[in-house]
Amino acid sequence: MATRNLLEFDLDALSAYCEERGEKRFRAVQLFRWIHQRGAAEFAQMSDLARGLRDKLALEAHVAAPPVQGEQVSDDGTTKWLFDVGGGNAIEAVYIPEADRGTLCVSSQAGCAVGCRFCSTGHQGFSRNLTTAEIVGQLWFAEHELRRRLAPPASERAGARAVAARVIDNVVMMGMGEPLQNYAALLPALRTMLDDHGYGLSRRRVTVSTSGVVPMIDRLRDDCPVALAVSLHAPDDALRDQLVPLNRKYPLAELLDACVRYLDAAPRDFITFEYCMLDRVNDSPDHARALVRLVRDRVACKFNLIPFNPFPQSGLKRSPRERITAFADVLQGAGLVTTIRRTRGDDIAAACGQLAGEVRDRTRVGQRLRRGTIALVPAAPTPR
Ligand code: SAH
Ligand code: SF4
Picture 1 (cartoon, helix red, strand yellow):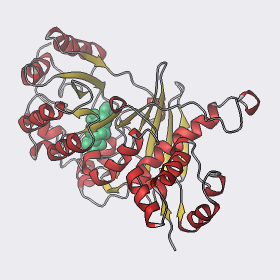
Picture 2 (cartoon, rainbow, N blue to C red; picture 1 turned 90 degrees about the vertical axis):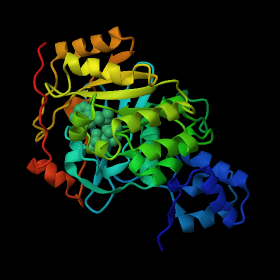
Picture 3 (cartoon, rainbow, N blue to C red; picture 1 turned 90 degrees about the horizontal axis):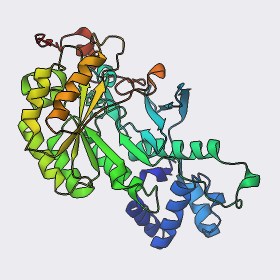
């Protein structure tokens, strides 16, 4: 008989699961803390749970992340794990250590159906949504694996029961997949990340990044407002239609209105707009000026310019440094806070948009992109 993976449950769902077995909510809290705060996978080690409950759980349930199929560590310490999610599919998560924080970039789908022209995941096509257990499992595994590696030797610890310090305090849903096209599994995962009995992450330090699934931006605002990043990549519908095909369904005007509505509940008072810098496609000063006209006085925002990370078959190039800086200058000159993202882990293909994993494409998106039938017409070069 298949047993339940308890990583599937947020605290409310785990409480319901325990209640069905005649256990009070505080038992679920204890169990949840063992799993997420201490990284326990064996019910036998959960010493403050009654033996009867432990025995029952051992028969009916388990706690497991997807099996790790590979690990790569970059020169800068960035670590990428490949998780086997069955059926020939593998997904990736990336840990990015920084001086003041530890970030985990988490995947939400095996592949992605949006099919953005400049994204390696998009080129893979789409296989399936990840389950909540597979989403949370990436954090559960990475957090406790890193704690074990970084923990001081037992002799220096306060006691055998001491809980090691948290390693990951920032989660970005920027791995493989479009999180808002897997909303049902995403929501309990976010709740577990935020729960004080779980990972206790601040809402400001959990970021959902979306290519612009308008109705789900509204749902997220109502259900679980966390920091929101929107992948813009173009200042007008004609170009965005080509770069982010979802724009044909939810054009810029609707997307920006959804961003304004989101700000009513957002934990930050701005939306982060991501903009992938593609050489001679979307990176001219004219594009920057059009972007200023699009967003200024309309939505409180910051810009994050991502130098395009190339991958085989993309046929696109990264904008040269001086063109990125000139672009940033136009935005900044207009009063829009703009940062240029530092590329991390590109030596192990762990940088933004390079995550490919292994995906059994069930759609034609990847195929069409590979054949080049989803064409990208580069914008006419503008004078510099
Ligand atoms: N599907 C979501 C989240 C995953 S992608 C989204 O699109 O927002 C995370 C970010 O990486 C997005 O802003 C995406 O546009 C960007 N990205 C994708 N491919 C890239 C590439 N090759 N180089 C740089 N950034 C890329
Ligand atoms: Fe999907 Fe995001 Fe990649 Fe677009 S950029 S294909 S939405 S993962």
